[in-house]
Every structure is written in structure tokens, then in C-alpha cells.
Length: 331
Image (cartoon, rainbow, N blue to C red):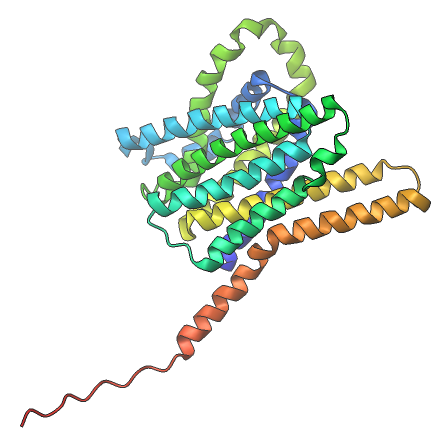
């Protein structure tokens, strides 16, 4: 991955981490997803018209089919994620989801996009999965949950996180196919995929339509943040997919997202702790070291990649060109 694609991945990860915090605090369901979808449709309409003018009319059944599939999987992903946030801790659901997704995406991208994954790439995927496991709590995750209710909450978080990760891999591959092979604009893929989500969500909230006005007054700020930062972050990822392998982008973006989100959550938790001396300071120091180590373990392959790519380019450039063989005389 080149420096441009890596910069896009890092910026997208920061946007993604922020809107996930907003979604967690909102505690929403399908109604929150509908609010966000409607706001995306309104806020980003001028840009979609400007980019898609004279282009969308040339799309055929394949293009619209891919967009519809992307919208359906995104709806399923968002509802699964919100459900996991309601029944379990974000610090469990989010890392598990982001650790499962790159492993599945990398394996499927090898088949779908005919990508090659070197041993270094395989090591990077495994390192990120291991780092994300440590970010989620590592082997001590279940030991911390001493009572039955806490353990059940942890297992629910693992289950919903894994289900979310499968769907992340699904829409990553679908949208990667759209921007790499069909050469669709990332802006249009995200916008029209969102348009397909709104009619899918409407039947899900129809029974509770009487609660929509009151819920809107409570959740519109969080929905606005999701509608603003969500498309920005995902469009940046799709632009990175145009120039870098899907397996590499999926691996790196999930690592940076997870590390940024976990570190922000941990710092917020420490800010609420009492005092800075004695046992509180010692506990805080141990937690900081564990979080820093796990985050560094997860994003190390991302940080190393430009240097590895540059070294490979230099080795290819400095390799001596073999002299042409002199053909033996037949006389």
C-alpha cells in the first residue's frame, strides 16, 4: 500500500471510531439507522448529483444489482452492530468485529480479485487478529467477568461481534468489486447504497412509527454525526481500494479503526477515575501499558508496510541487470 492509500485508511479510521462512539451512546435500533439513512440522503444529495450527472444513467443491471446487494448487507451490518451495542460492551463487540472482518476479507479477496498474499501479508493479518484479540481483553477477558451475568454479557459481545465481522467482510468485498472491477465512483457506491437502505428499513420501523418524533428529538444529534462522518470515512476506504489490494485495505483499516477506538474508550474511562495517586495510579499505569502494547501489536503491520514497500522497490531497482547471453557459434 502506498503512502496515499495509507493516509486515506488512517483518516477513515478516525472518522469511523468517532461515529461509533456516537452510535453507542445513542443506544439506537432500526429507527436510529433510519434517521441516519435519511440524513445521509439529504446531506450528500448535492455531491451525488454533481458526481453522478451523466454517469448513473449508463448503469446496467449488474451495476444496480451490486448497489442493491451492498445496501442490503449494510442494513444487516448496522442493525447487528446496534444490537450488539445494546446487549454487550462496545469494547468487546467492536474489536471482535474488526478482528474477524480482515481475516475473512483477505481470504475471500484472494479468490474474488485474484490477489496475491505474501508470507509477510499473512503474518500481518495474523498479527492484526492477535492484536485485536488483545485489545478486546485477551485471555483475561473471561476472568474479569466473575459472575454469570457478566460472563454471559461477554459471550454475547463475542457472538454479536463475530456476526458483525462477517457482514463487514461481505460489504467490503461487494463494494470492492464495485470500485475495482466495475470502476464505479466510491461516492456513488456509498450514496446509492444508502438510498437502497432507507426503503429496507421503513417496514422494520412501521409498527413503532408513533415513537419516531420523540425518539428523533433524543437522537438527531448522534444520527447527524453518523450521517456526516460515516460516508466520509467509508468513501475514503473505497478510494484506497482503487489503488491498493482489497485484502490489504481491509486488513489495515480494521486494525487502525480498532486501535483508535479502543484507545479513545480507555482514555475516556480513565478520565472518570478518582485520583492520580496510589492504587488508582498503579492500575491506570498497568492498563495504559496493556492498551498501548495491544494497539501497537495491531497496527505494527500497517506502520511497517510503507518501509517494506520502499525496501522492495530499492532492491528491485538496485538488482544488476544480467548481461545478454552470447549465442554460441554454430560453425
